[in-house]
Image 1 (cartoon, rainbow, N blue to C red):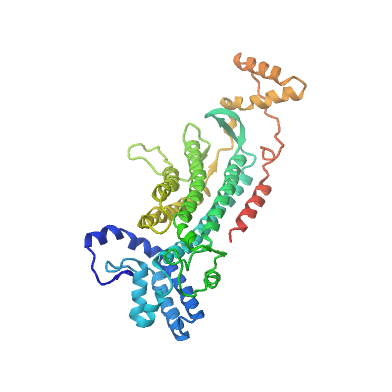
Image 2: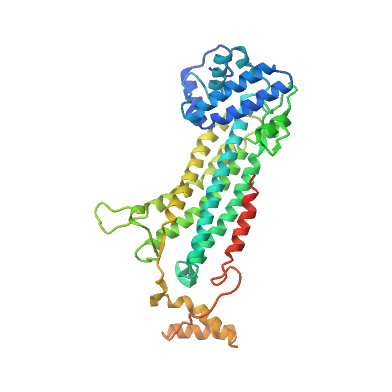
Amino acid sequence: MKLWDKGISTDKKIDLFTVGNDRSLDEQLAHYDVVASKAHAKMLGKIGMLKTGEVDALLKELEVIDKIIISGEFHIEDEFEDMHSKIEFMLTEALGDTGKKIHTARSRNDQVLVAMQLFLKDELAKIMEDSYNLFDLLLSLAEQHKDTMLPGYTHLQVAMPSSFGLWFSAYAECLVDDMQFLQAAYRVADQNPLGSAAGYGSSFPIDRSFTTQELGFSTLKYNVVAAQMGRGKVERASSEAMAMLSSTVSRLAMDICLYLSQNFNFISFPDELTTGSSIMPHKKNPDVFELIRAKCNKLQSVPNQIALLTTNLPSGYHRDMQLLKEILLPAIQEMKSCLEMMHFSLKSIQVNAKILDDSRYDYLFSVDTLNEKVLNGLPFRDAYKQMGEAIEKGEFIPVKTARHTHEGSLGNLCLNEIRKKMEQVYIGKS
């Protein structure tokens, strides 16, 4: 069954090529098509296109279909092109002519749009929740290890003293920025496109404000052409937000891989969170974090894929847009799994509390030692020159008692302020 079927069969090769793996992807979106169909049926009843009994029958049967979908027993067989045709077939099979009326005043185009945007709202909300949970863990770890010193690096050279508190909370505050992008993507998705039909509206007297409220959208995508042009844009916005988040998570995974190596030995994990070697019995490999790094780096390519797919398309609908699903839907699942595994593993991190006991890290304190001379009245440039000469001659004696007190420094992590910032952003998600 095809919604556009006029009784003329299409070559099987054309069907196979044009449908692709759309059926399996649609099974992830089918629940949202049912949700939108319920709102549409109620609206058709409100404007007199359906009788009360017809609306009630449609809602009851859509509820039955939704339960099948949620149970995992909903499948789109080869004779159906997509979720829309399968759901309409099920309604018609159960309700006869009443089932055929569900497509009144809408197109498959706005069905896809509204289902995708409802789906993205839910998925972005889950990703924001997972991001917040990771943020919360990082801040807890920062508080727990705020006084445990850690070498800071620039150019991968020993630079200045840091701490695990500074390191953990740095990634926590980076997640605040990522949350801003997720919020922006959520707002783009939170506009009702239903009623735009094929992209040019309908001659039926539909009530789009009603469906907007019924579906829980905060606003309407008013212009029907703009609603159709939003396809691709909402997916790109979501992928850009995930790419930003992926960048943060990937970088954290890289740090963990580095710090876990024997050459650094800054951190460790229980044996059950690492893997071994087939020939080297001493190995404890950070496979989980290497895969998180790789998956998150891969996720950063998704916005470019969507951009290339949609660049220079004229206004209106084009079949190219079907491929958006096969790019974005797996990426969303990958993003959630990376966040889940990072949170799961990071809970068990063990830190080395005696890293700076090793004399190789004495040079971390060269800047603090220099600053101490400046505080005692020596001009900065003279103090810098003296320090350089002492280091060259092997006469450097580090001052390890200097205190960093300004906001965001070693001695003043501002964890409460960072938490308040995140709360302010996160609470605004809906």
